Length: 375
Image (cartoon, rainbow, N blue to C red; front, side):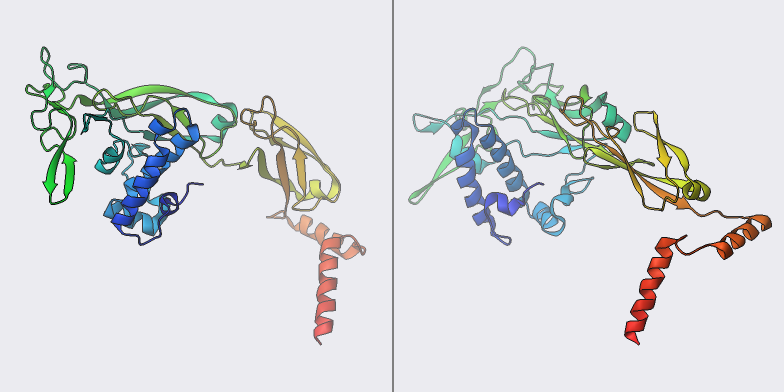
């Protein structure tokens, strides 16, 4: 389960934006990948921190989160998912973050390469597909490096120049009393570069929107909420930075016969009144397309459950292991009886000896005892 965003940043609900920024500064500094090389836990924690901050720093997103929680950004709410697709993680880190982790040369900050945004794709599959697994093709709209300018943003035959305002640093400083305030350069917007002749294809941004077709392998036994990561398939990075990742979230559609519980499957099967009374057999389907035969003992009651070992879902990354199938029987009362059938049932009732219907006899005996105590 995803952690509460306030808990992730260590803030109370109702915290001011200054308190949220201060908490973010501290945690981002501790968990930044540049300070935790090779630490996967720190990298995951770093993404969680930025995701939480990206929501809580924005008044509208924060109001939606306070009201609906994480659901505000799922199924088309909050982030505006379209065709199963939407942004999931913060990617370009704010000026607050740049202030903390820029590299210095001669007391000045160097321009940093920005990693591209991580993307989210929601993919719904059937229970049969979750059982057997399958390759799936998905179409992902995302920003990719412009081919005409190779991502530089400059017209073919030209190159970006050093920004004259910030001398390529991406920041400008202003003195106010005892304090030096550093802001993003207003001319290059922090890139440190100035494109004199913008590329006509991307208008100088270095990126274009493009729909890419990707293939992903859905493993057998995949469960609701499983996340599949495609490294480097997210948004293109700015200033030559690396691409983000693509995260595919799996949802499994409801099935008309089977209900899933972990690795096990459950289904309810109707049994004719006569078969339940006299005994017999029924056949039930299995998710792999086969059938299984169940022997029905004489006098079977509704609710009795039969366990078919190894007929459930494959265990994800569990080799050949599989769960079980549980079949719950429902004795069906006949309808639209003929006159002769009704007479036979009345004769059966009249000739029934004690113990013929133990469930109802036991229930009404307990009712009689209860009412007797009340009186």
